[in-house]
Amino acid sequence: MAQRRSGPKSRGKGYSRRLINQREIRQRFLIVCEGEKTEPNYFRSFRMPTVQVEVAGLGMDPLQLMDEAVARRTKAAKGTYDQVWCVFDRDSWTVDNFSGALSSARTRKIEVAWSNEAFELWYMLHFNYHDTAIPRAEYITRLDRVLGHTYAKNSKEIYDELADRMGTALKNAAMLLAQYNPPNPATDNPATTVHLLVEELLRFSR
Image (cartoon, helix red, strand yellow):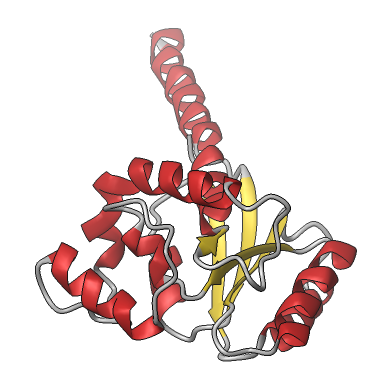
C-alpha cells in the first residue's frame, strides 16, 4: 500500500521538474531605446516565456544611449544579460553623433537596431517593400492608410496589429538593407536593422 502511494507522487514530481525545465530562461536581453514610448511599447509586447527582456525608453541621443547601455550592463551582476541592444533612429541627429554611436557599439560589444529615418519604417515594411526616402511625417500618413485607422505613435496595440505580418517585414527589411553596398547607415535612407533584433528575440523563443 505504501509503495503504491509513493509511485504517483514520484511521477508527479518528475513531471513538475520537466515543466520547469521547459520554461527555463534561455536568453536575457537588455534593450535600451531612444524613444520613451514607441519602441519600448513594441518590444514589451513580445510574449516569450523562455526569453527575459528588460526594456528602457530613455529619450537620449544615440551616443548618450550607448553610454547608458554600457553603464547598465556594468552595474548588473556578471552574466545578467546575454545580449545588450540599443534602438535609435537617424532622425535629425548629426552624422558624428549617429555614426559615432555605431562605432562605439562595435568596440563595446553592443548590438544596434537603427532606423533611417524612423522606427515606423519597420511598421511599414509589414505591408509593403519601401525603398524610397520620404519625410518623417509621411510615415504617419502611410501608416494611417495601411492600418485603416489613425496611427497612434505610442500605441500598446501595434504589436498585435502587425504580428501576423511579421514574416513579410523580416523579408522586406533584409532585402532593403542588402541593397546598400557598401553600407553607410548615416545616409542609407530608407533602411533599418530592427529586423535583426526581432530575429534574435524569435530565435530564442522557439
